[in-house]
Image (tube, rainbow, N blue to C red):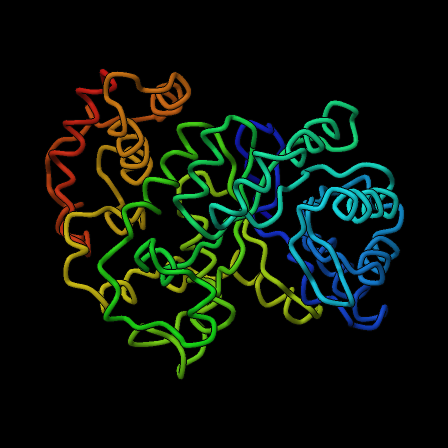
Length: 381
């Protein structure tokens, strides 16, 4: 297992966690077998958004005394009315369901997630009511360790981050979603599928969101990495060929600020299948071929795929590009943390010898040499 720091929370989380949604309505033995497999693989981050009491209790029972060894994302505002999941801002219901979650998992939730902020109405329901005060009080009283939020909308997500409240974000990340225009609602495409004619390259608002997360040290955990399975299915994928599980995971883990991917495994076998990611070759992880097939105007845009490596000057080109892209948000006020990360690299842009071997390998025609020069000028090395 690989571990990554989750933004300014300072917590080290497993690069692959477990989204527990699909354990709902499953028998306890199946839940325990899946949870046990996750523990055996080194998973230390579990997302428990489901408001149903039975699934929560089954997960807690399966964890047993190991609860103290892992971290849980629990969602504030996920309720279960008449056996239907609902998004609630009604404070009595919100408190009832979250405090039940606290009881079940030992009185403490590591990451209290403001649930499902996708629209202006959602935003107002959280930040213009007593909802946010409740979350902040939970943190102050020690019932939650950190405040995060979940969203599928890059514009609304950026507004939430700008409040200064959250330390982490759970966001839907995959190549298809990232190429949808931000005006498109991702859930519409679970039903009707993806039309590749809409793809115009990485949507700029999503790209800016990832950069903002790095700038503000907002850790990102990933849901919907497989696009509800559609990216893996020949009949549903918008790409020339279906993507594989390792390709989807690698794409998500390559995005700026992403710390953990949380696939919704419901069996031991599915858990073990996603863990193959750590055993496959770089070629099997490579997602660039799929992206190249759906667009012509990707040219010039770095997607941090590291196809350009190896560099004879030992520059981690993808890392330099990530920090350069963040610095470009405001070249007059580069965050100290970004400067520190850049300066910690063994070789910066200034080490470039302009051999152009990287540009020959880049599938998207990125002007890497000039980017290295720009990075050296901005960061001073």
